[in-house]
Image (cartoon, rainbow, N blue to C red):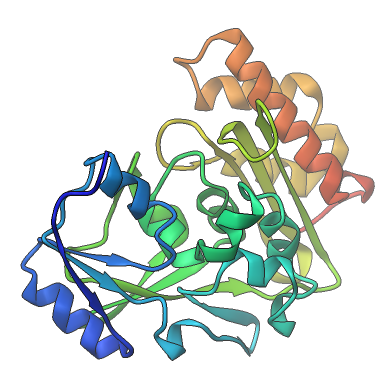
Length: 283
């Protein structure tokens, strides 16, 4: 199929983009890498009257370190993170995640902000940024507001974004010597959508402990009680039965095979992180 007719506008300034979205009165859609919106247009699952191309806005393509945080422009591509183009992210957990997103052709055009706005439950950044405790900055004619990544997604392909709001950047905590991080997903074959995923993030210096399940047909699922228990008691709190119990409580409607996939993802993410090697970590 081919996309329905729509007006196309390329903008080079955030203010211009917001004005175009506001003028669209709910019928305009922002587009960056077009790796999500493009197929939806062709399948006629999306029918905006106007597409606003924000991919070439300079301020959306930068990465900078600001204190304990790294601010990532919404139009930064997955491939740029994978290739270490931006020094602040070269040793960051996001670097290892980026290389496993879909296929190289998609990573070359797909962007962080576009992936988040699309809100596919199986997307990597949705679960990873929730685990990191990232903060998203969005702008509209009413000004700018900050949204926690774990509160951004309401359901599959549904977010808290208003029709005239644009994601301008994402702030993630910078890595430290005490950062323990892991991410694992199960796909039928490399590059396909995840059947299950899990991300864990522990940092004693910041007193952060987060475990998140993704690809669960809705928003990321935070297992904060389990994370706190592991932070307090280390490996003793991460036995297989403890992990199974936490997954069962988070996904009560899933069958045993599905829950086994999520438990395996969680086990491997914890193994990758190395958090269980230490005695105790900050809660």
